[in-house]
View 1 (cartoon, each protein chain N blue to C red):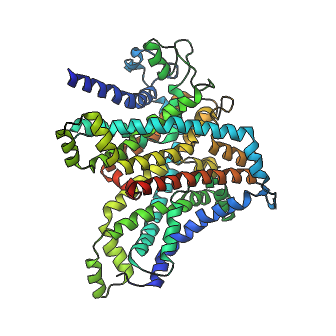
View 2 (cartoon, rainbow over the protein chains, first blue to last red; view 1 turned 30 degrees about the horizontal axis):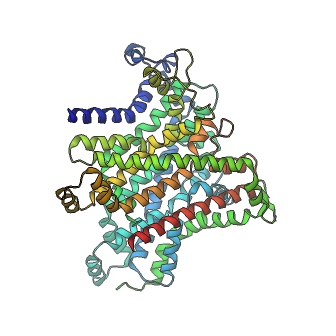
Length: 274
Length: 293
């Protein structure tokens, strides 16, 4: 009896989390007048379902362009960011040099800065650097300010510190330079940590909103989230197209999550705080 | 013994530190500078010291106070409910069988879906009743015999509606951190408490909660700061309305910059906000220090 109650409760709670998303998926295929229709019957009218909203959303939200912009933004941030953050982390973990502790303390202070607050001066700094207006400039503004990231420097440094250094010392004796040791020995040994950083960065920047809202001023520079927001606020409001766009903005992250779930090690997220 | 290699160390640090300096430290300094200047977005060169007028204006502006109160109310609603909810979900699904691992994934899915998508979705779920047409929330409520509400346009309900949706979205993240903490608890202690005849409540209060002190303090601080950063939900779902009842601090700063173009005032708001975040972080640090001593 008690066992059954447990199963039932867990089913209800799981429904609370899944139902809104199931509704989004199903409603995105319903004709416009049926979207807000209630009652269980609406879930069963299979013949009425249509893919027209997806075509409308793709066209009106310029979804292909937006998807490309988001991909370029994320690839840029991760590719460039992983390189410079891991290099800085390696230097903090391996060398002693004047000013190291002070610089590292500064990086730790930057950990808590919420980006939303700095959007205004950041925008004007980007403008001074000619990173506003054109397509390439906007892409630069989307990527450059977020490639260097204090949290990633900190996180990767912890992983470099936990590596045994015998192999690196042996390479040193054999005459390998520090660049080779960083690139060929240290970096490959922290692959799991790099994977965690990549997955978390993809999820974070896919949902970026306030910064792209400020810098993506031209239609062709919009990211996926901004295109969705635009479709949502610009008349005429077509609920079906908005839902279809929301589904298309969700499928990529769910796929990434499905295949990369094991790299999200939440114990790592809070590890630095202890 | 760490090798001394000043040149190469600086070369490896340079790209990341220069970018952090340019895009984090420099903007921060400019915000501090502008916060005590009379300066507009379009005439930076005409900036002039104005004796802290921005700060005194902000502290007496009823709209800024409203924004702060709304955000604080949002925090007061979200933090306890989300943290407690996450804690009990974690205790509940902390079992090895496949079904419970699947359930964990289910609770985590809204965290993965981006906030703008969920803001748009929940605007539709909260749709008021128009004839037989209504959003899913009202459909469920009327099915169980409650009355439909206009969630996002009712001044009393709008902010709680945003809070509920935000708790739903984020609770899986906190749950995962609690799960990691639970798995580091010593099972001997729990077993010993069980053998000594402690019931479930006593085990929870005397063994589990003290053992998870670090996770609890971390999750509460992180949730508080995240909740104070409220922006996407009111920006997309209510535009700060009705009657400014969901206007958030970040939204106020954003509007002051890009609609009113008052850079000095917006910077002062940003600096006050950073002070708040610093105080919360400092408090967390001290609570944890005291616990460890």
